[in-house]
Structures are given as structure tokens and as C-alpha cells.
Amino acid sequence: MTLDLVIHTRIDLKEFAGQTIVTLTQGPLPREVLASSTAAWESAFDKLTGLLGQFF
Image (tube, rainbow, N blue to C red):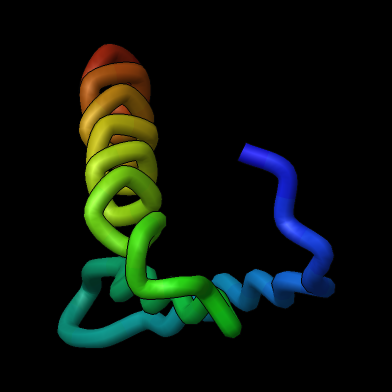
């Protein structure tokens, strides 16, 4: 899908109780792409968790 928008993505990393909290904010997104965008980010973070799990 081609969107005629500028979409901003912000990823914040914060330390809390010895762990890293990741907060992702993205937008503006049209309603029709929210579900697929959410699924894509969840998949990416699952892969990152698996990769980091090999080292830590």
C-alpha cells in the first residue's frame, strides 16, 4: 500500500529495575493499516527477543 503521508516512528529505551523497557510510537497511521502495522512490529520484536536470547 502506498501512502501519501509522512509517518514518524519513535523508539524509546529506558532502564527499569535492571531491565530495558522499549516503547514504540508510530503515526499518523490510517485505520486500515493499524492491524498489519501492529502485527509487523510484534513480529520484529519477537525476532529481536529471540536473537538477544542467544547472547544474554
